[in-house]
Image (cartoon, rainbow, N blue to C red; front, side, top):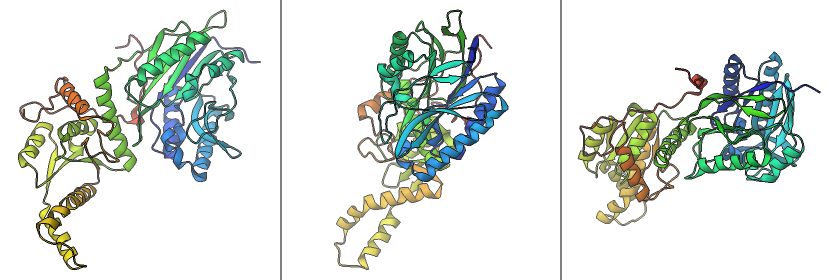
Length: 452
């Protein structure tokens, strides 16, 4: 039996799934592993279901996608023959007719071991209660995602000899999700008396948002490492074994947490990025006639920068509002004349079966013409059309989960933020400074504690 090492260096890859693109996910895992190797890591940990595109990609898991995941695991496993870091990769796996949410250990040039989530969820069948995963002399307990919320799963890991807990996760953002995630982890540490490292996904895939905020807790429940919320990041957690074979976590980088309105705003920014990325578009287009369009446009500018945001203004609406928005946010605003569209639809209907004509028909055609003009303008500019109207939620309605009062509160919060005001009547205010979308290719380890 291999002797336990005095320390274990984990690389925490807080990244979002690659929009269901397995090849892209494999390429990202390889880049992250190369950087983890340069930092001297022993093990790189990736989030739950990373390889397939995250939990919301479950409906897309056909035979071809599952075979691609299997091939990706084999390719990444082969990479580990170089003696560098091993990997824990979140991936779907199939065992017979059962689909599982799994964590797969890759090391020594092969797939060493696979563990399945023990708690049922979605299309995934529960696996057996898990035992530890041996890795270079350390017995890793690997509770996957919602497994961590169930004390009996961690109890089983403790009883079967786990030395510490490493949890790949994809906790979906919600009003209290960050506190819930941390409190759940603390409860498991108290019960098990083991150090715990949780690696959460960060980003959006067009359907959900993951808030990141990965962390490491010592067996004393102390927070030793905390990654930023929402941002893709690669950080380290160094675990040290004492003479009694107990593992502690060396103090590392601890990112600031976000207060609730800041977190919600950043979730909206992340959702917008996820939609555009999932759609494969270059920019985001907004209907500026919607009641909440000013706030939505500000979210869009924070997500992409003004040059990648297009405001669309149907000609029935105030041109002054368009001018104010363009001046305040620096975005391009394109007018949409609806009269030619309505005239064309009117002529088309007049040439067919007998239908009502006159003002009543034109009024009925207005929303049709409006929708067609908005969609066509967005497509022409390679943009994804996103609405901000709480009253008309659609598949890409930015404020779909919010009430108008919530949007008003966020607008007031954003107006007081140090970047800019969202009050469109104050055109002298500086435009918001965009928060550039993080590029996974350029991830770097968080600065060591105490570093400049």
